[in-house]
Amino acid sequence: MQDSHLDTLRERLAARLRKHLDPAFVLVREEERRPYECDGLSAYRHLPLLVALPGDIEQVQAVMRICHEEKVPVIARGAGTGLSGGALPREDAVLLGLSRLNRILEVDPDNLCARVQPGVRNLAISEAARPYGLYYAPDPSSQIACTIGGNVAENAGGVHCLKYGLTVNNLLALEIVTVEGERLRIGGSGLDSPGYDLLALLTGSEGMLGIVVEVTVKLLPIPERTQVALAAFDDVEQAGQAVADLIAEGILPAGLEMMDRPALRAAEDFVHAGYPTDAAAILLCEVDGDNDEVSEEIARVRQRLLASGASEVRTARDEAERARFWAGRKAAFPAAGRISPDYYCMDGTIPRKHLARVLREIAALSEQYGLRAANVFHAGDGNLHPLILYDGNAPGELERAEEFGGKILELCVEVGGTITGEHGVGLEKINQMCAQFPPEELQLFHAIKAAFDPNGLLNPGKAIPTLNRCAEFGAMHVKAGDLRFPHLERF
Image (tube, rainbow, N blue to C red; front, side):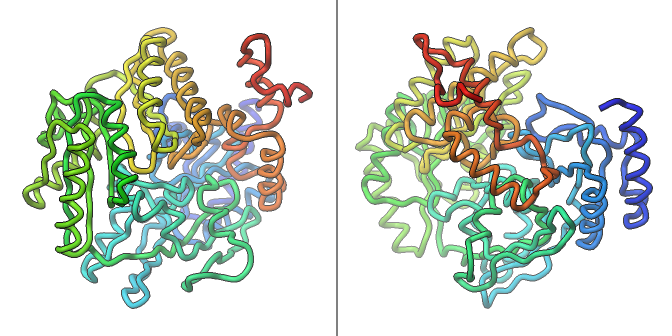
């Protein structure tokens, strides 16, 4: 789209939006728009047409109505911590920032729930619920900054999702604003609601079906006791097998995390968590419940990990040491930034029984592409987060990192897993959607999108590839003379 046309459109939209929003929250100058040019996947950057920052639901509705009338795309954004390019702007689209909708509307201890606006930080929910002896279970590593609206959009998880589930398992209701500006309530305070399960459909829909303006989350009682064990292993594959052994034993930890040597060393240098830096990998296994239950369970965990080959198993001596163990894990991503100019964080999920194999093949891919990889992930549910280390200033390294990452995702599919566990598809994984789903399923996804957004104005070009795109992607994966996706040749 030509610059003169965009300038005219920007001016017209800004004039209309300023009738409903404080002019200070309609950002049009380049220097005002620049902070919104990317999300956590910072390798890709685009300036939005303009940025609108509504302060209440009525203003969100006004923005959506105006953009719908003007046929202008809208891209919703929370805290910008997403790692798949889901909030990446477009030059012809309004970026709708929801950070000002940041009120906790109600904590209801009797019904074990809280109503919050989408701009509320994940951690703030548990902080508000703590005086009632309650907390919100999903805890992404970015929980100090990420917002609940973004968690809903990406179906975020966290270190405790093995036992307590992802965002979708901890929601009761959503209020959304449709592309036409209408306000809808989905779900309710009961255990079930009539009709189709639109709550699950909207969770993880990446801002493509509606704009989340209010969230009702489940709260849980804070466990009487929580205990974490740290197990060191001399072999990464052995640590991966230990995860499968632990679950096969019938033990369901609250959290079960793994870090390999590059990741744990980076985290230790950054946080000083007390990790054994000579280990090839460590597992963090946390159990919770009442005192007797935890005592019995942590003993079983220790016995099983030693039987699986752990060279050392430590139990946190007090709450301060437990907090340090987890601080190192949660700081693994920023810690990687201290050992490499850039890193590319992947997100895929595999069956636990294939952990050892996949770790071995990631190591082989690292050799093939000449790029280091640090592995840190939610081992209990098979959600991998390989960090591919590269230098964006070195010619070709970003492209090699992207190709390396794509191979990891295709490997996840090959062993029966998925291309994302919690980061979403966005733009980052849109090609690998073609490896995950056949054309018939992609067509169904497009049909669902069209039912909510017939003109394709909500976060266009993200998450669901066109069949033509899949055909091009398939043509790039010729093996032994055959297309990887021969059923797409006709598109």
